[in-house]
Image (tube, rainbow, N blue to C red; front, side, top):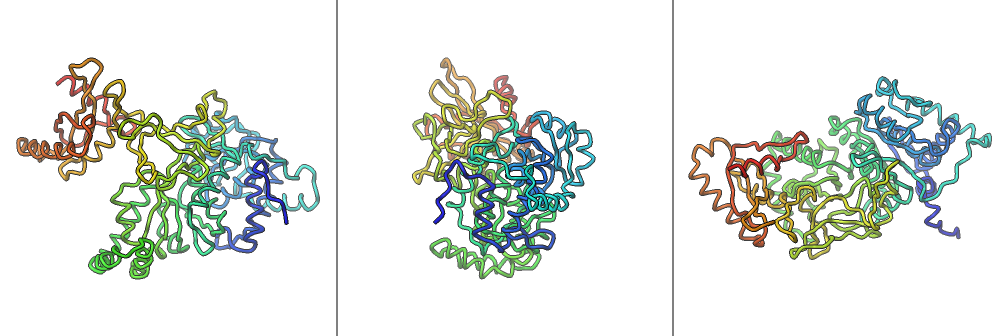
Length: 526
């Protein structure tokens, strides 16, 4: 029996080799009408890595501008020892690409043909089009067969940098250990089998899209296909009939909207409502979902069948989540950041090998979220800013743990309102409650000083339709009743003390977020 590899030896290259042994001739990737097996993928990655190694110095940082299978092949070849991939969004301007190249000291770029004009001005010694990959693979294969010394695989360690993902905070250095920790833990939490089919629809320049949308399915033996563009999503779904997809909240809402439009167009609303009413009470819920898929099969045809799971990166509103579940398309909420290789929790449950907790919780259990685990990044490139502080990563979110140990996010630390020396409140939590009234289009909660030194009280600015302000007295009475209703279920320190009405929309800053500072100044002047 072969001895198990130590953690220090586990790299993405080892993962590919394991997959080749485990799944062999089974399809790994569906690309350009062809089935590329796990064994062939492993061979092609090794060959491309060999070809690139003759052109790049060890540890070279390489901008990777592209998508789909060419991106995957190049990323894995670099991670196999040829260099360090720096994924870049395919929509990046020439100026942004130049800035990124300088930021990470890139010495090479691999680019999709459509990005050729935007990479012309890059001051890098090596520039290769992804259209040349077939030639480079054959070159590398021939060199490996000939035993060329320069093409032999370079030694790798689990803590070597595998890739650099650029963020607003800095260029995040992710090791093989970081990436494999997420893949191993996510595989334990996510039920995927070789019978599933995955469709990659998101930009692979984001680590969560690459890991959850592509590398995780590959690790579980699930064949992966690539959608050319999100505006061609339905065509890709019909062609590949996926059962698993990693999506954004926007895409999840778009899928639901398209489903409802299709059902309405075909006059099937009544039938769908009847099936939902029939299957909702079935327990366990998974059995109800199976029944929904069977009975609603005809309505899934425009989507190539029903995705059996949508993993959503970002906050998906509860109403969309509930409606997708009712039609047999359950979702799972992924919570993470590039600094932890894209994932800290699924559906609020921490990764098995990590620790997720609330730092210095208040009486109601709320406080700042923090995380520790082997997936926390090595650091930021050319920066003294530490990613883990005292062993913990602080993503900047506020939350609390429910009775089942699941994380419930309630807001961002940067928006938290300090009412006194010991108490902070997340305005987003209250704004969500206030917006449950059909009259409230938007809500902004701010803190106003009281007569007591250093203490504040909460005030709400409620945006309603201009027509509602024409009946101001009646609208104010309704809003007063609503605010009292919301306050009933809140602890005293979270209750809204006063409110004012405005015509929608409320003012926002250049990033599109509510401008609470401007609203606070306005209320103070009043």
